[in-house]
Length: 122
Length: 110
Image (cartoon, rainbow over all chains, first blue to last red; front, side, top):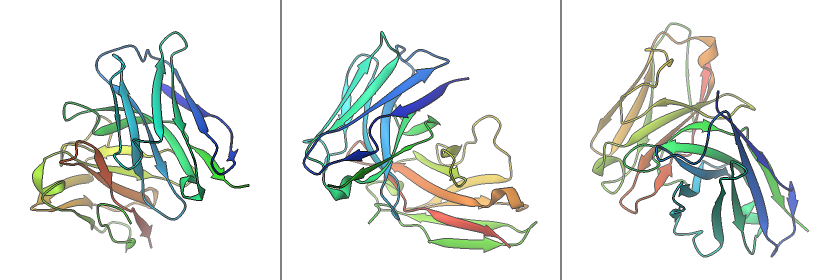
């Protein structure tokens, strides 16, 4: 059974870098069938897709976050990561890592991590 | 503000059917048949229950069904059960080549 687990600091100071890692077990991320990505949910709001990456390394970002976000793969560790620069309180959210497929890309997320709350505060 | 609009809450009694709407535009729901729905119980990860507008992943109850008309997608749950009480989110592929989500609907089983 595939499992995804987010890890990273739960508290980040404004203007600093938010860094999260998703460890994948029960299957390899180095395959062509799926995309690996990040989705977040700010308090009291809906889900927001952030970014995804293909096994080849091709990455895709939400336009509003493209300038601040970087997603990467580490196939040797079966992990992928998200870095978000210059964070503000608006980046406070539960962050989920996901496996996605469909519509020729990453429309549907069938495996999710449990989510990790990241709070941006001084 | 979420890109797709869902009612904040719906409710129903056991055995009844309920429908949750998800309204977008011609740039998302109306333009593509790539609509999905997720169920999330408190403290749990979301679960994919509908994809490609009306398809169910293996293992998802046939009490869940999806449909679409113009710019609005709908999730119908028939034979409501206590275990269906959860938050439900819709999503759609968009003309910007990304995925938009709804704000979520809290389903209460009375």
